[in-house]
Length: 224
Image (cartoon, rainbow, N blue to C red):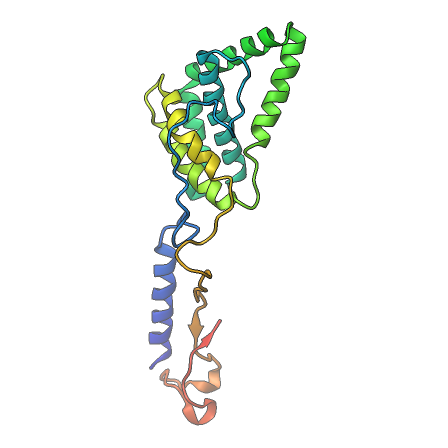
């Protein structure tokens, strides 16, 4: 085997590896996070006491926006998830529905806290609790992967129907905050990704690129 053939084979192997698109699949099999549709006032949701149906819907829509905003910030370690891009598309495509939801929440907190100042303070606390409820470390992979799918649904939902995505997907997004690992294998297998190369010492090769066994022993490949 000549040096040129070996180097050509190594180049082909490395080129194939580089040509493979990055994957956002963190596990061989991820946990199924799917949950049934919700209304927004179930246990585990940040419910609003004495809220009207319109206020419950506004709360659900705003929770969806908050969750996807957290994902856009927390999940940038994996750009192929497109959490940032789809979040921005959602904000642009559904700006009217999001504004309406926010205005409804402002009126709710002003109504239930007797005054603009007290209402604003309550709204600020609500915003902090909402964002904090989607912050995760141990479940980051599952949350980011799930949020990516839901952000796509939100980005391309028909205008005026973002609330349908919130109804259908918020339960699933909440489920993804629970840490889960590899579901296919009891222990995550190790994948060998090192490249094996021969010795390239000048003394090991003739001028014609042939291996000199008497100087360097049997021809072997060493992982690098």
